Length: 125
Image (cartoon, rainbow, N blue to C red; front, side, top):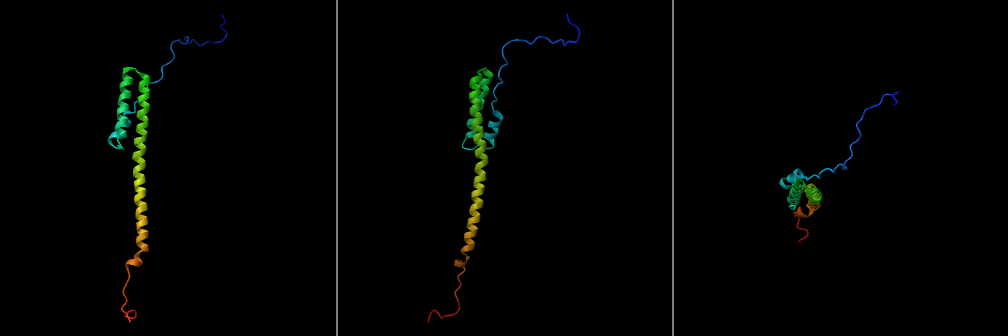
């Protein structure tokens, strides 16, 4: 036996089944937030339904169905969040643009509404 250098005693690696893939996320908290606070076209409620289905399938052990429902919950949550952020910004931009346009229109038409009758009767004769 060769003892000329120190050896590290390591146990041999255990052989067995490959590590299982992590359980899919169910996005339940995000769906509850979208349902309560940012419910655009009921997409938050739909996301909540798929999140609950994903959690139920994960608990029952059906990982593939849980991944499928988790993916759908994530898509509906993203749509609900995007719609709830983009639409108010778009509405605000439309209001600001409308106010600017109306103020320019009112400023240009001041001459039309401030027509003054002159005191001279030269035009009548």
